[in-house]
Length: 496
Ligand SMILES: *Cc1c(COP(=O)(O)O)cnc(C)c1O
Image 1 (cartoon, helix red, strand yellow):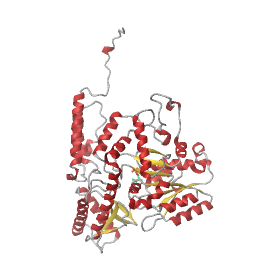
Image 2 (cartoon, helix red, strand yellow; image 1 turned 90 degrees about the horizontal axis):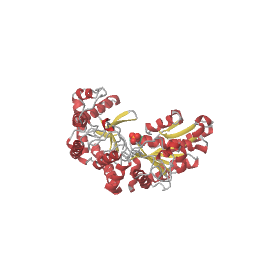
Image 3 (cartoon, protein in one colour; image 1 turned 120 degrees about the vertical axis):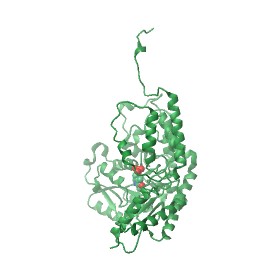
Image 4 (spheres, helix red, strand yellow; image 1 turned 180 degrees about the vertical axis):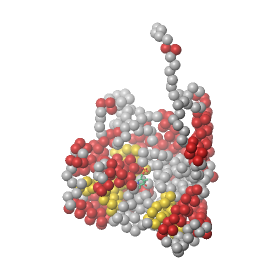
């Protein structure tokens, strides 16, 4: 027998000394969070943080630990009341999804199993793959297409654009870099395209002047004639067009670029056809959008979020790529420490990092998997349709109101409007509407955000909220009327 006195060595772990205490706290957290979500409509949509709360977050790096009950009390006191609010039924800022209770519980399960879902033979890898397969089915992509779950549409867009760039003309850009290419690679998108697409272009070496911004029509859709003319003149000048990015739902107004015509141009000039469908791609579930969005299924690549219009808890998005080998060739690299084996833990499905930039990946697939099973796609279809019809209802309320006017066509789930009076110039109206928005937030009434359309500041509602009801939009319109009139009366903003 080994007689070494190992018993005198104290070895630590991060597990609790008192498992019962941890378990009880966990139960408490579940109860508190279910209460929070169940009664969220009774809370203000947003609350300013007092100085005392901000100062709490100045605390220096802790040297020693503190009891978990205390940490949770701090969470309840300093964090919970000052949540962002996209769980609230009157949150319509930017484009942000709401999440669900089961999604939150799924995240707890995923985090407890804590697998690194990149490599190896284990069930989480199969869940991840199944969710990607469901995404293909959702978007009408072929079975032999490939895809990857990433943190958001920004990452999904750059993932696709890396594949598009590397695939260009089948020259070995991956090996030789862009400097090996004579001529300038060019990418095309409308002026309404999300900034993440330009960031991606900058990061993959195109430079922002490698992005040709095509103008839009009155409905904020890309002018396709201008696109084609630009491609022609760029070709004539010896440049190298390689990709067009079309929008299925622009961030400002939710407009859909003329997909079929863009797809045809891509075919004619042998360009990669990428679609940023961050939220709008999900409208494909509705027969009403079937025709307009049918060309999505023809795209070489498609980026879309699951945390926006699928209401899945943050973060998760999907990048789909039609040509599996183009996808794999853009990213696959197999160092000896990631070698696959015939049997055992290191066997199984192909490592996911062969299809994207990230090596370590969490089990974000689980919340998607559980949520889709919980509701079925038909429920998502109903909710997306409900969000759109709520926006049409909001547009009617605005049109029937005294001072509010619509500032963009309501094409999908986004409504842009402003408070207006005839004797104020644009600058003053801009200030007035900015004031109204800040008051809406500060009073905890509702959280829309803004857009600037043709130099005019507008209040913008983007509805990817499964908790909103028509009454919430009625309250918004009423509050805008009241706040706007009050500001005018207080003569904070005076006619010229
Ligand atoms: C939100 C959005 C993005 C970026 O998506 P993230 O998930 O925030 O990274 C890109 N494009 C459009 C049209 C968007 O609405």
